[in-house]
Image 1 (cartoon, helix red, strand yellow):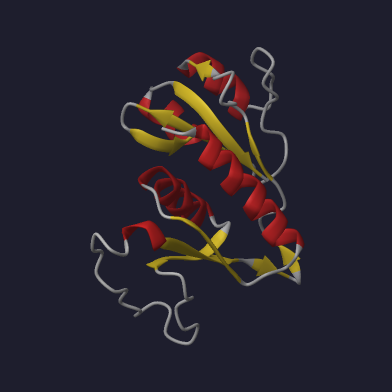
Image 2 (tube, one colour):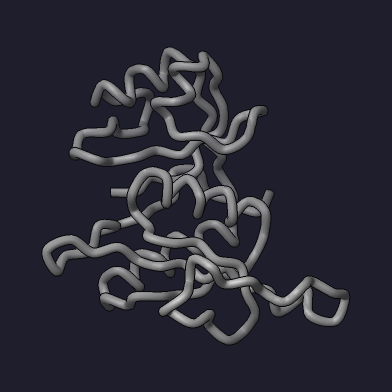
Length: 162
């Protein structure tokens, strides 16, 4: 798993929401797809669609069928993410990395329990804002921190979304 690509996506999504764009594209990898789907499930994104270099049509985004993946077009595959806004304000205000490529942060269930209750665990600040999410890479896939505590699994802290 490359945290460099994820950090680029985090800064790209933060900048996209500040620029108030409706649709943006990021590279299509399994990790970025899983994070994007988790962001959509948490309510930060309106849609996640696989596609090519050209954006899918906005009027039938839910029924859009992308072209099949071949050896010739695999390098141009993109994920098209629909940004979400409420009362003319972006739902995703900021997305930042917790683990860096040079310093990975691992947390057990007790530490994650402290974080979701708003207390600091180690040098990681707790979740203090309403709707704030922390995504964790576990051996069962990428999950939100509250789900990790429910399932009693720890892992590497990836990024947080506010």
